[in-house]
Image (cartoon, rainbow over all chains, first blue to last red; front, side, top):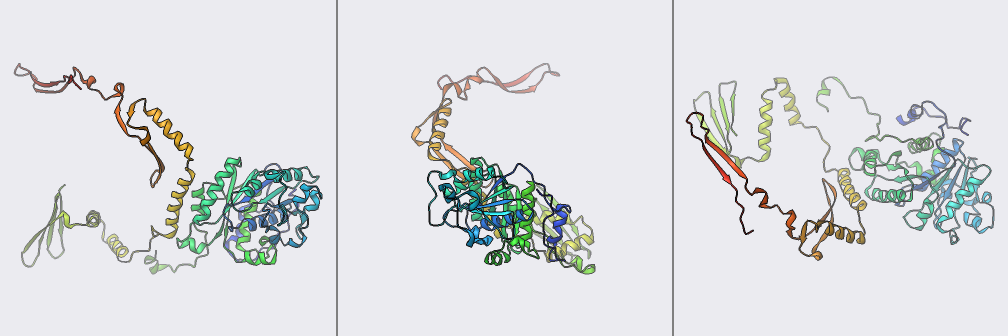
Length: 309
Length: 200
């Protein structure tokens, strides 16, 4: 499945030190090795809203598709639908999982294929103004996941974008999942909610939980105004999948409807998400550092080095 | 505690410091006029920082000249250190507390059951004053994290578990040999023989 070399954008000369880290981290390989049986059902959740679940889901799905892993991204938010906007597919969603469950159409008719990434499909749970069929309730997505498994070409990854909160929508979304990606920002409110959600996930039987720390501002971390990724990992006690810096490009790419990771040249956030994707595929985790290394101007040596610390 | 420092200054002056339990006595002798000034400062005059500095100066005396110059530079121009009460650290502390208490929140019926079980376990050993006054509190402590405390008012210990004087009946304690009799042939011993109080 991952034998064909993926179409990666050409790397620029020297935008930042993280650029060369790609080849270093991955040992010059062109594709990650898939770990575990397929399809892998991963739920992207956070508890608190607005920390970047949908952005993360869209970009992880786009990355996976670019690495030639057939992926289905499911928007499990029945009321407020956003994943289609981030992938630029909002005009092409006509049939949803609700229609499939009602028997009005087939499952493959409800899957929307991305124009550029042919391995990426989107499935929305329901139309915004209609309710889910009560017969299924919280097992809706379990049924959908099973149906996807039974198709002639089952996907390698099913990414579920969970709604915010811990109510019925959350319970529905985590039902079919075996792994979870917990997205959080390094602030106290998000971390409290993330901890609560981690507890709920473990109660539900999902033991494989990894964190993505989103919207990190390295300047604030250095000035001791924001907690670092290391602190976050200490607090939550879960392995780290990725650390994504605050990047204006996220807003631009959302507005354009093109996932961030497809940018050429890649931006810091896009690179971080790409690395997170590799780690997701290989079931790996990263070790956190307190502050990301940045280029520092050379100090004037000699007599004055004695006076500076 | 008695500490004595002798310092000799290059131009011939000398000063002796004597640190006793309550006073610091400084005796200073100038060189030109042989004047001796003695002043005693009681311990109350010292803030805790000064005492630390005293110990520090004691160590400094042993360092070489170059090291002392470097030290002086670092003292006069201290490098900026990480603030202990930076925003990130405050957030971390608050988060720790809130995570502990969130993780260990217990439902009301669990609290009732805890109280009942604790009362049952304790009533094997003590007589409880009143069952209604037993309280369970959940609090957070900086060092220990979440602390559950069950407060049980106790009337008295059950007889079989009492720290009783029975154990001392007939015991001989406090043996003191004033004369072991090796040289004089007489033995002089004092000891205590415990007779329990009959009405306890």
